[in-house]
Structures are given as C-alpha cells and as structure tokens.
Amino acid sequence: MTRVIDVDHLWELVSRRAEATPDKMFAVDEYGGSLTFGGLRGEAERVAAGLAARGVTEGTVVSWQLPTRLSAFVLMVALSRLGAVQNPLVSILRRREVEFVCRQARPSLLIVPRVFRGFDHEAMARDIAAGQPGLDVLVADDGLPTDDPALLPPFSGAAPGGAAGPARWYFYTSGTTADPKGVKHRDATIMAATRTMDSALRLDSADVVSFLIPAAHIAGPVHLMSALRTGHELVIAETFEPAREIERQRARGVTHVGSGVPFIRAYLAYQRAHPEQAPLFPDAKSFLSGGAAKSAALHEEVRRELGGIGILAGYGLTECPMLAWGSLADDDEHLAHSEGRGGEGMEVVIVTADERRAEPGEEGEVRVRGPQLMDGYVDPALETGAFDADGLLRTGDLGRVDKQGHLTITGRLKDVIIRNMENISAQEIENALATDRRVADVAVLGMPDVRTGERVCAVVVPADPGLPPTLAELCERLLASGLSRRKLPEQLEIVAEVPRNALGKVIRAELRKSLVSQSD
Image (cartoon, rainbow, N blue to C red; front, side, top):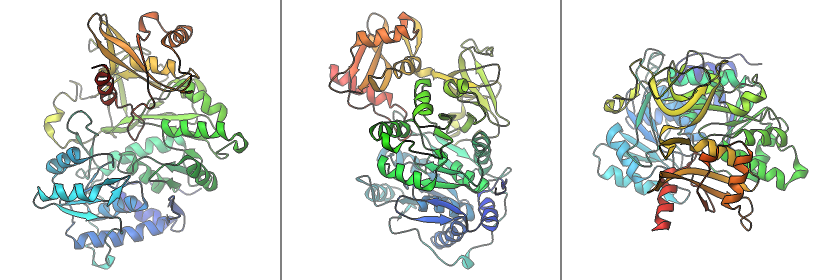
C-alpha cells in the first residue's frame, strides 16, 4: 500500500506523488490515453511553461471549459504550478452564462474545445472575447501550449492557495434560472473535502475509481487531489456509452464505480439485458453517488444485482463540496437512507422553521461550517443572507440528523409543495414512486392550483412505454408504501425523459415550463 501524502497545495501534492510513485498509473481515458503520476507532473510543467509564455502568471484568472479529458487534469495542475486563479466551467454552460462569468471573473484567457457534443464552443468564446477587451481565447483540441520547463519562474512555495493563501479557484453554479453564483475556494478547502471522501471510501493505492462527470465540476479537483493523495488510479471519460464504459471499467478492475444515479441506472439496465455478464464489476466495493438524491429502493437494487455494499452516497454543494459521506463501515440501513456523517471538522446543524436547533431526527434546514467551506462569493453582495447569525451557511436543503450523526436529506426548501397550507416534500414522493417497477424515472413538483394553491404533479418515465401506469395505480402503490393520503399526487404526466443536468439533478424549472406550455 502506497503511503498517503497529506499537504494543502496542489502543486506540492503533485511533486511529492511524482517523487513517491512516478510510474504508478494516474488516469486512463476512453481513447487509450494514459498518464502516470510522473507523466502528469512532467506534462503539467511543459504546459505551465507554454501558458507562461502567453502571459499567465501568479494571480492571472484563467477560465476553461474542457470536457473530462486528460488535458483538463493536466491544465488544473499547470495552473496551480503558476499560481494562477482558475475558473473551471462545465461544458453545458452556454453563451449567457459564460459571458456573465467572464464579465464578473475578468479572466485574461478563456480555454475551450473547438466543438463538443455538437456545440461550437470556439465560436461562442470568440464572440464573447470580441466584446471583452483583454480576453484571449485558446482552442485546446490540438493540445495545450507547451514550452521548456526550464523557462518557468521558480515555484513560489506552498502558501498560495494553501491554508493561509488566497483563493485560487472560482466555481460557478449552473444558473439555469438566474445568473450563476461564483464560489471562491483555496486548495486547502478542496483538500478538506478530499480527506472526507478518502476516509469514507477508505481509499488506497490499490483502488481504481471511475470518474465520468464533468472535470470542471468541483468534484473534478477533489478526485484529482484524492488520486494524488492516496496514489489510486482514475478511469475517466468525456462521454458515456454504457457498453464501452462497462468493458473499460471491468478491464481496469474498478473498485469504486462512478459517478451518480444516471450512470447507476444505466449499469442496472445493462446487466438486466445481459445477465450472462453478471457481475458487471467483479472488483466493485461500492457504487458512488452524489449531486442527486438516491432512493433506498435503488440502493437495494444495486446491492442485490450489481454487488458491493450498494450505493455509497455523498452530499455537498459547490460552497461546501463533500460535507458528508457514507462510509464502507456503515450498516445497510444508514447506507440506504442517509448521506453519511459530516466530514472531519464539519459542523452540520439542522435548524427548524422557527430558527431552533433541531432535536435528533427532527427535520429542518441543513446549515454548515467547517474546513471545506468556501472563502466567499466572487460577488460579495451574495454573502448577505447566505449565513445565519451563528456564521453557518444556509444550504437551502431540508434534512435531519440522527443520534449517530448520520445526515438524511429530505428535500429542498424551494421544492416543498404547499397544498392547502401544508408542506409536502417532493423528494419523499419521488423516493416512494421510485420503488415501483413500472417507473423508470420520476420527478415530482408543485403546479399552480386555484383551489389549493399548489397540487402535487408526478412526472413519470414508464419502464414500458406501451403500458404506462395510471394515476390511480400509482396512488394505490404510494398508500401501500405508507405515504399519507394528503401527499398523494393529483396529476400524472407521462414523458419520454425527465430533464436532468450532468450530475443527474432534475431541472425543475425546465420541466415545469414545459408542462405549463403544454397546458396553454
């Protein structure tokens, strides 16, 4: 077992890992590309020199929008070597969001692919740069710029971005209904999140972890630092094709299978269609989920059909990325129904509607503080109201903590459906409906109602499109599961697909808008 390297600066972490295990595999991609830890350091130094030749230096803001490629991880490390401020942008962001970010973060350089998934990122970037003096565009499809590392300025030490240094990361929320929020982090805050994940998963150098979500998501640098810290291998992909990815992960001996509910559902569907290949992942210890709620029913299906301990869930937000994780040591009841315990040093508090700290098991808003917490927002005005009088971040999520410290998320404050002046959790109904074999996917939301204020609407993707369930059948199943009659859906919409973002979260605003337009 390779020793854990525990430092708070990304470049120092890269250097120490490359010295300790230079020939150990860092990551492999779907095109046959690979990098060892020594190769990562060497390539990052060459790219850092190339970027320095273009004027990137300590404190320079660089925005980048690359898919989950080896080059994205190399770029993160190269920018750390230079002490730049990096602003990763997930690939789903388009002109409105990217232009807003560039005007607020004021990058000197915007790095994009030429075209990804049919969208012309280069044209968008050049159009934005034309309206923002001082913004240069670099198209990275042909590789990142390189130069002689001997030309690099001396590394300025571990302080920038470390425990006492300035913020070196700007992450922006998706901004589907409003302007994105820019969240500032240091290497040290991201490393605190990394330690939480590493401890929960008990990661070591023998592990192989698949990472299939956007590298530009805050989970990207967390997984990068995790691999560097423990010496384990990453299996990455910029696009997800189930048959190909299953074969690759089997071949690499993946032990923690990523990366979230949409992928897990695809694995289940593939195994059911190919029972002769069971188990799909013979080395799997767990199936990782974060970013979107998982149901107890899905956990049980995974444990029974795919193996390992089932789903190992984590919970966080851009402002505090891995604040709680389930553990390999947890019992099945907690794995099925909770998101685990708060990470080291994290204070997770449940506050009721009357601003009282909740008793164990009592529901309220989840509020947090600790070493993972952001350094603030790029726009300081957003900090007004973001924290309560005790300095705890208001997450906007509803949850409860049991006597053992396990956190269960029960919904979003803004996703609570208020019918006849009573609060109803959309997530509770979604979790109950997810146990129905006739339901392939589901979202629940409140729709305007002149009589009750809001009515509960279930939006269902049927497992058999030719035989969709009826509202009466679903309500009967919900009552049998123990759901209160007052929470039953009054409206059912059958759809081909529930709109979700790259992490599997339901895009409720888009779904609600489409339903309203259909009724007009």
